[in-house]
Image (tube, rainbow, N blue to C red; front, side, top):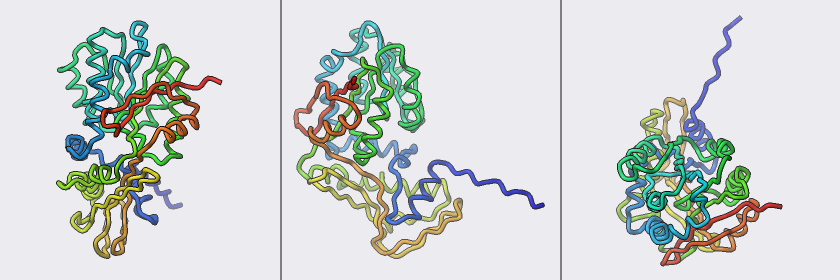
Length: 324
């Protein structure tokens, strides 16, 4: 009898590449942009003048942290859980306020990138030594499954940067439902939603003249080349951004400039591209109050308060669980 061949085990990145590049239209998940290089590029994006989201949310947290914290259990204690913490630049404004008023809390930043978490941990030790924290590496959904263990006191769940905008509405509702299922009546969800605005403002934020967002999206192809022995020629792909002001949906694509074949040796995979064929890499949804209220209601959440930037480009909402 011949020995049974061992089944091939793929990483999440490899599974996404195989699935996304062998279907039509082609797609790759934006979450895999974030290796060490991708983390640095996103920090560069957040510093761009065209990328208004960072400054808008920064101003909200800088000017309104005392009001935001009014419904936190400052004396009894709470866990501050941030999904997609990144470099924590904006969150540090809230942490600084909470530290100054000697609030009883623990900060639990969650991110898929261990590299960016390590940097955040080092920064917190230097800048906010009084803040008690624990770094949690993993995807939103992996860590959400662990949230139920944090049930001894109030949970404040932070999702900043309009990260929910990376999800189609159906997936956003599922995401909100998973958070809601792990919330108790006294918990709060604090989430940022980028608002609908002049279409050119949106386009410029995702297609800057210096090519930073282009390099960010192309880092998906660079990762395939480096980690999976691919031979993508990055110069033969065009970065293209679209925005539909009616639906509020911005999408990023990498477009093949010519008919070409790409070999991904580690996966024993050959991918053919037609001229102008696309790879969809990112979605960034924009919202209005009606859409946010609808999404919340579908997830059995209610809007508690709204915090708006001076430009009205961006809003943070607090949500509570609807108790039937």
